[in-house]
Figure (cartoon, one colour):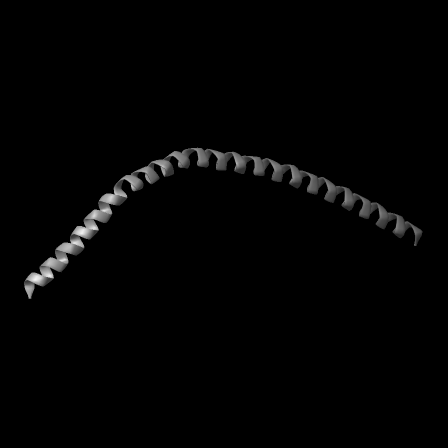
Length: 85
């Protein structure tokens, strides 16, 4: 009976050490993956930022022209509808 208790304790200790090693490896792998993701997000931000800025400038420049065209089309429609009567 005593030998089984010692055997069980040894097996449990080995299992505990293996789990600690696996969790440590997972921790370092997760840390490396997090660093890679942060680097990729930084690269994406540096590439997309200027594109979004240019798009915003273009939209700011064309917005009054688009509004004017919509107003002119609306006015032309109302004039055309009035002339059709």
